Length: 110
Image 1: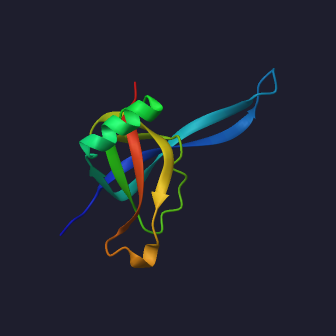
Image 2: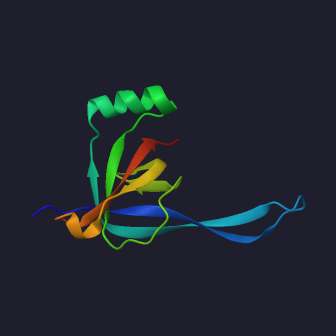
């Protein structure tokens, strides 16, 4: 049986404004369960590096029904920190046979 792992997703909440009227945020991490972690295709790594300058480290399979915003977020798993980039790729949920309906690319962070 195929299953994912628990990853920690960064959530930012605006808590006020600074002296220059810029937003001030607090950061917390929320556990997201059953996230599938996979290696990208070598050709995809090369193409993305050439087009964006970012190197895909992993591709995350996000569970169906997940409502989190995965765009440009920090993610923790395997004891390391990563950052998502690009937009999540979403398929037609009813036509995808397994538990994951979105793909998100991550690069190593920090």
